[in-house]
Length: 181
Image (cartoon, rainbow, N blue to C red; front, side, top):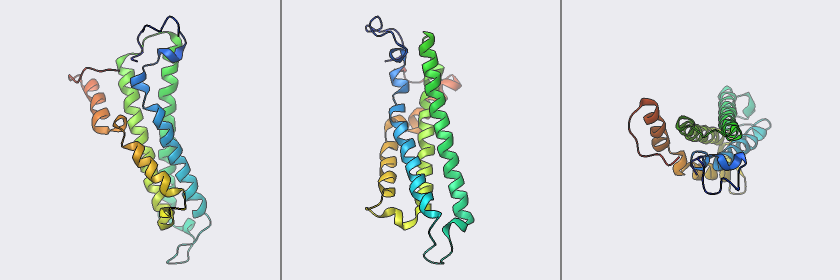
């Protein structure tokens, strides 16, 4: 579970079984969050290209505020994907090398997981504003992605108070709870 040799190591010697489960466990849900953010982007931006504002009749796509929101959401989604990929690629490289993962990497994996999820939730929130009140209809997918993103974000593995403090304690050299990673 922590990336160190275990009773099954002799039978399961592939890199996957050398990964620190507790440090990388959040990445099972980060992909869900990325999917929510990417889905929200498609559901908000696609229609915004074609619809007019109900109060002015002006194309939504002509609004500078909407254009900026789309840019910010897109940057958050892109950056979250990069953080997730970098952590997973690094962990697999360590696993393939046969080395034991070091504690600094484990706390960084957890930091990057909570921060990438935060960026995904922020992107979904921004895109809900772009979708407008139509995004709230139960018949549409936007409200489901909004709820799913906030539900997944509530997982303890994405708590900045917990995960951020674990990383901060490590970086600052202060004693923290014994790591199970």
